[in-house]
Length: 111
Length: 114
Picture (tube, helix red, strand yellow):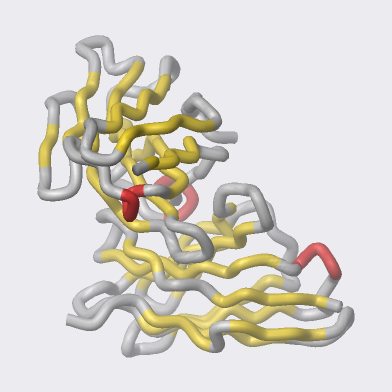
């Protein structure tokens, strides 16, 4: 049974650019949640996808968007990057609302 | 905002039990207590969760007070690899989306020392 994987591991972008982060969910899981973790803080909920539909959203602007595919993998897209978007982006998969299992994260640096 | 209060940091000697407290005085009847930990720069790792009864698994034990306003996570024999930030979270387990998401506070930084 493979766990949650994320790509890329690290990414450097400049302000104003767009970025796509990817997540493969754990086998048997149909729900993916995305979190943003700034340095020294706990993770903050961005949104959740279930059956390819957005199923809840935290306090993040519309330039944060996502997709879930039929195989339950997911993408997080961020447009018009800002310096404050620099963070560790975490993906977590679960079977419906059961306990969430996290991937290793993608470290995004915006210059 | 997180509905839990945890000490900022704790130390524990290797081989001894680590007891991590958490206050959740406003917990609702349908909210579970979850514990995750995060080792430096890795994704959070699920440890255990419970509603009202004490729970135990291969990683830890969770003791919830009778009034459910506080709980304690117990690592019975702490090792150096247990050094991490431990997050206590209350969550409605039966819902997805915004209601079922995890609201992390700042957690407790546990340092296990030789």
